[in-house]
Length: 409
Ligand SMILES: Cc1ncc(COP(=O)(O)O)c(C=O)c1O
Image 1: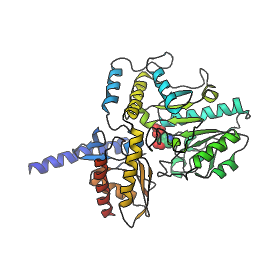
Image 2: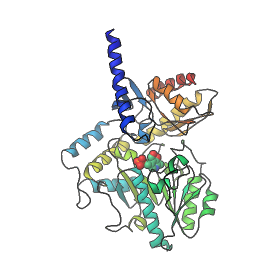
Image 3: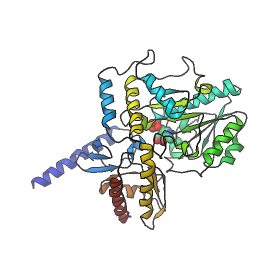
Image 4: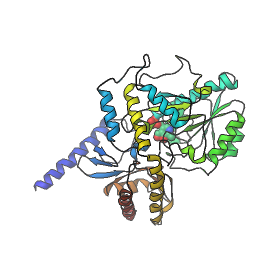
């Protein structure tokens, strides 16, 4: 009797939170009905005390795991000193972070922003500015090429060049100056370039589209075409960067050095929104005081956290770990057999199961019931992107759950 009462009270706790979110929030997400209040490493817990593997990692913003002690310590120390200065003044944390970003990306300098979408907007401005000032494109005529199936964020300009009706419908008019080319087709990219093209914005792997991996050599060929045609090559590494695919940057798999690299998500160590655009003087050197900025971009709290986040990636060799364990995880997925599985794919710890039917949501619910949180994209794909600190044993346990959940389909 008593146990039944406690169980009911606990269930009420999660129901209350779901109800509040549904009643008072805009309904722009369809979350799984789980309410979380604790996280550590690869695990989270719900308000009823159940533990789950986090296989989404906040869309790869938790590469270092939940509440990494080193990142928490850096944040707490900075909270006790200074949190916000605006860019009207210098602070002690920004310089060291910029220097570290320059080393990691191999670029001359960087601009710090907050969300990923702001990073993308910054890169768009940089490419246009370069187009007018350096390439000599007539004012107002610059065109940026992007790939079909892209996901670069949710601002009006960015959704205006999305090919996903769910993203752009109802939010027009679209900002002019963008054109789409098929993803993975270097020849189509070359054909689409005109004298007015200033940049090509591309994800090395399309994460939100369902972990779409382009044919090997695409990045390299696209990079070479951009160089030949004098077009900036801009890699959106917001999801694929910082170790997720088994290299610090995903473009490194093909030995590509872009003109601009956009980072976000895991740059904030799972604590705080931090994004950055890195590039050479030729491009980022064109910004002058007053042409771009952000009240919170480059604030000392964000910078202290981002420095610690990068420290953890390097000290714990998380990109290498992601490469090794990603292969192990993929082998495990391939060993699962189910008539509804169309494909298993992945690079590093960015993996996906592709189903022949739109069972993604149902499969995620079956996983949740068994203690693993993942999210479907586009109904037929379920992505697995655990924190990179996951162990081999934990992957084994996760694969057992995944295999068992397939029985529900
Ligand atoms: C490749 C890519 N670019 C940009 C974004 C947008 O980042 P944010 O949600 O932080 O604005 C995302 C988010 O999923 C992304 O995956």
